[in-house]
Length: 362
Image (cartoon, rainbow, N blue to C red; front, side, top):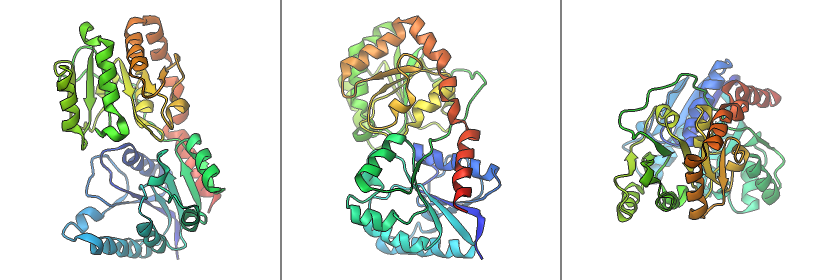
């Protein structure tokens, strides 16, 4: 006998990253709605708070290697779902490997499954082949997208009809938090994974150099970890900016750093629904974002809560950063509008949308 009140949330981890942060918030929302939440994570990485049971496959199978490790993990998930009578699964992972997802289809069986697509890089979630994509996902309970633009793109390319968009939620912070002691007096901030092929921090560093904001003692703070950390620091040094650009490791509590920044800057090649923008607006910090695919144009209202600029254009980005400093009226207008521009993304509102979706498929 299966239990509709039990939900398994399957994610890569509960560590660094927007999708992982969403997994922790989704668990919190569902727990508060009365569901029994089971977090199943693939990697042994937990830094975000979570509610419910935790199945850490990375730790359980730390000593296993290769394909046998994957098979053992799969069998463990199948047994866990059966033994705990879990009938509903929300899968947040990226899913780029066809063979692994064919195995996953067997593991999940006939349970209600909600597959999330978090990025405009669709091939990280769906096979390029329309045939295999439909084989894997046409009978899924729902494909859930984090932006309308991604949903529209997938429906056009694959012809799916079992789709919906639910934005990622945010936590509002009312308290004014003291500025961290390891930050400069005035700064722009980027926070997220330090991976240039996605986040395009080369563009940010180039634009910051062109802006000449260092001459006004306006610093740039990059907060996060990632595979390109050393390479990014090399680019900073090559431009003689090491006295004005600071690299800090991932911060579990990023709010004090955001709240005391002039603005958050996003320069990604592509996104899904970038949490760094909405988290910044939620604490009253304006944003500057490139108009990448997808997400920013559904969040940033140009000259209302921030600035939206052409992507891959360092001059335009440099001018936007300078404008935020030089035009005090514009800056205050964006700051005053920041929180109310994302009120529709509150935990309460997004939780209700998830509850409506789950109840519609009971």
